Length: 122
Image (tube, rainbow, N blue to C red; front, side):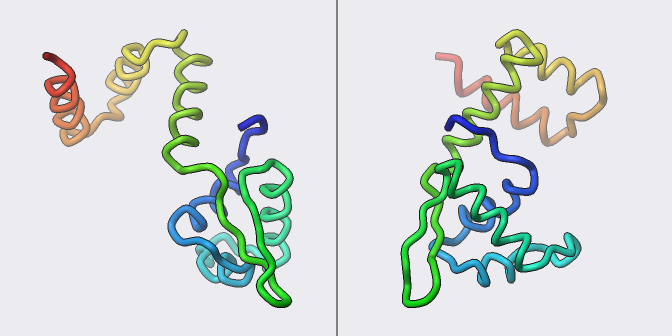
């Protein structure tokens, strides 16, 4: 994926990753009303995502059906790698240490990390 997805565009992608294909109106209906977006805003986001190549659309009568062209897991993997590379020199341990130092790890997070590490060991 060449261009990054903005935070607002990511909201639209999450809707389509959860359920696709959808029309613009269906995407609009699934956006949290607290965002106070108009249907025009959603259509703008869909247009940007089409231009970026992360969405495709097909005609369905007089409307378009939108679907992601990139899997959510692939997107998350790429964004995670970029974050770790940019902020932590490509190493995950300093990221976890940073979260721990900022008291941002819950007991459940720690248990999950411990279980993951245990599964990674031969």
